[in-house]
Length: 387
Ligand SMILES: [Fe+2]
Image (tube, rainbow, N blue to C red; front, top):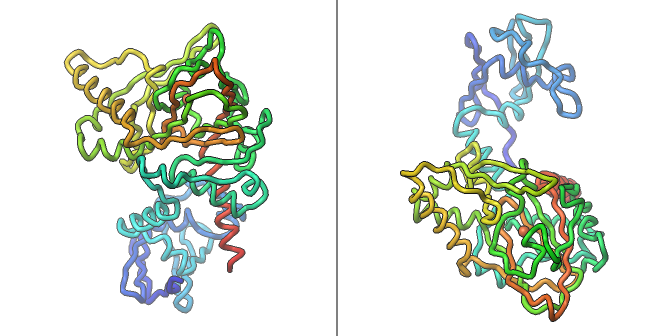
């Protein structure tokens, strides 16, 4: 339990309110920021959405006067408009604007949604849930979704081997992402397949559909029949590989995170393509995506002087992805399902003998934001029930 925030004094400057805290800290809040974030019902709706039009606020807004009520509330009567704002000390403390406070809040957000990088050691402890529990218990569903968030993949057992169940699993946490393959797709050996996934060949680990923008961020595969020999599923943590690559070959990491490549899927009816980097970097400079699919990547558009270095990096990455030290492997039996974060964890399979048995899976796509939303709501509910 954190100590309630208490204010010692406040001081007005030309454009900023300075708050002196009883714990010795000093915080500065530009008036424009305070007016924009005034908690009054005329500024922020009870839903949390802002009612105020930020561009309409006078940028030179300043207080007529400001007061400290006890040590727990700041009242500001504004000079340039007939409005009073009341800020609790706790709100002000939770919104301190020093670089250190902002960095601390970012660390707290990261800690709330931890990510564990993994390699083949995870084979001893594959994250798994049971559909018979996950489909009826918030607690079990929360634990399974937490695994997806943390490891980027999870297995689910005892999903009835019935057509369409893969979509029912998505409905536990979000929405099916329909594509040109339909709401769901069958994965079994086909004559004249449109995609190598529909043959009995082995598939090196890859992310699906990097040619789409946005790319589906979740893929689910549900096994309805499994009597063929071979066909082990393989998953590989792209974030772990990128962390290792950055450590051992920063130059290769740089090339793969800055060089645009094009992924394309094209047939008589579709022409879907996206140009982006293989390693995605977010606004904080952290890895946030892996796009690797050697089947759909197009001829590299890298200038002739730099092409050899790019190939060195690309082949190095591909060899890491093919290195069994990064493999988590399991045999999908009927009623098993697995889900992957499709911009983090690559999936593949070993070849199987389609003539000596049946292998039938159904797959579908969904999006990570829906899953994370459901997970946060379930966690909040669990905490509320504890209080
Ligand atoms: Fe795939």
